[in-house]
Length: 265
Ligand SMILES: [Zn+2]
Image 1 (cartoon, rainbow, N blue to C red):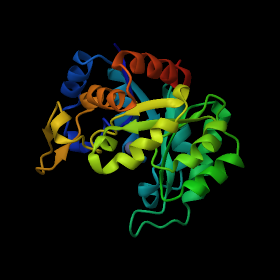
Image 2: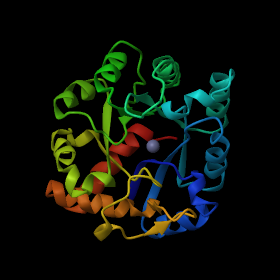
Image 3: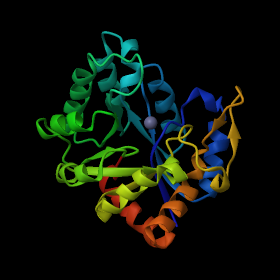
């Protein structure tokens, strides 16, 4: 069985330079590829370096809404430069009305500028959305999109919106965090996701799994728990059980879906 992580942040400084060890564990676990998402200009170089050193890493470059205040006047030219360096995806980009004190002003402009590049280059784009689902849908409906599709990472929107997003080319990515008992309602929405549009992710080092299925407990230098990217296998197993499907058949399906969106990169 091969496993594909549609979204993580392997470059995160909380992993404190242990990326090679983490990747060795991932390889032993059967993980074939992982989309490593940059979130701001400061971490794009690390994502690029990881991609050059490890073929498991599929690099993705983008400006995450949380880091927009840090962007330089040259951010867009910089982004294009990184995209020219290696075959890569775009992300993590998005809209966020949830994070306290985060200005919303400017978010749509930066989101749309990156969506435009994704459409022009036909690159898959990973979208973060918190409390802005209606607006993300409107913007996607009214602007060019990449023909190969896009990923709604950690899809936390309502089930009723799934058909409208799917019509535009959405893929819906399931994180291990939704295996917590309290996330049952969100887990249920994934029963409405079209089978050919499902992806799976860890979002490592974030989105911890429930303790009883966390196969790779990991703690950062500050004592806080970190999600190990090799936990992807447990996310597959947890979702397969929830959907009443064999992990093998789920894995085969997700492999096809992943290749359709990210194939060739
Ligand atoms: Zn993320």
